[in-house]
Length: 529
Image (cartoon, rainbow, N blue to C red):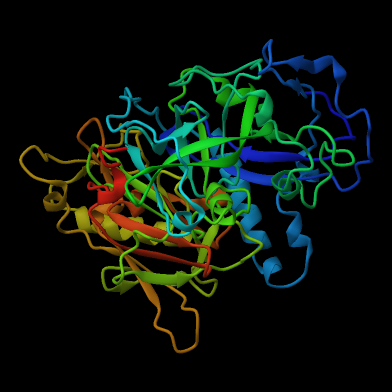
């Protein structure tokens, strides 16, 4: 990419290396801008102005294949942190987090073992009528999940986009803002994915005057001049690669809680030029499902249309086969039994972050010194759980002591994860093999002086995996790569067997034990549809 000081802005989404299970599924969506960039009417290069296809369905797509990049020192992921107040308290932590999400792709422990993906077995006939506004206000949309922590390293949904609807696999990520997928507009460089490239039509292109485009570019100086033209974005990668795309609006077909199919419009990213890690074939998904609290995320868009409340939840199965479900909306939430903790840093922070006030291994409180435990981010885009260096060191010491003399022998040749142990589990279940291990308990700060602290209990199954060698491996990793002693990340491994609820209406996050193997009864449309 050419260096040019006239870049007005770009979108950064972190993409991990496909060669390491620790880096799997950790996308990040954010906005960045160059404050000193001057307006440049020649920002778009007419050389890349092309038509998608011939005929009435064609639309002219201006290709920005040579958008210049800025040095890292000039990138601003969250320009809203310029404002003073509570948001500034979390600035250092959030910057460290995002630097980690970029940096981790440079490390390597082992290769992910890929799995063939079978097509959906629950596809049905799509009803042509959209739900009425009244029914939309009471709706919840449901997506069965596929994938697992190991060996796949990701969980994804089957999304149905376009008219007629076509299936695409989208990586479920609570850390990404924009939902996007590879598209043929035409595509100058795309990876081989599980499905043919998404093809937008003439009427799908989002204009700069669109409200969502305005929101995406808020606080930036992107490519729109005087509100005219297409809404472009650039995806930057830590390895120097990038992806270029434009915003489009298309029909999304979903299962509703009233056991019917429903249709709505959603603004998504159409990525037509991939470089770096994303360009490597084959890839197991077609794109990413953005679930952050940003107003451009899919839950926020559906809430703005009055289809759902801005609440969603996922239930990741702890079985070897993985799976589970995701639903957007509140109509399938249990009426009781949910433990809640307040989110911090809102509305500036788009991730789901809570404050930790204590951590226990069994009944033993882990002491980490005067700096405390910092914060925790719930991130479905991370396969494993990351702990601050001091907490990680003390926990791994305690866990190794628990396993010593109980039939476990550390296997130094196993590079799946930093800690793996040999153990004959041929005739026993994992829960029986690790009966000497204790639960890990996170205690989160409450919302008020007189409120009881919220606790999240992780059984050994919540921080261990059994790999392809039959070894037991620790899914807790050292957060020293974060370059911060105040940030922890709860990844997929520790959310298995729990319904995790992201309540953007009330700025809180909740969880409860759940059998994630069973989809809600509303997840299969009635035969009449």
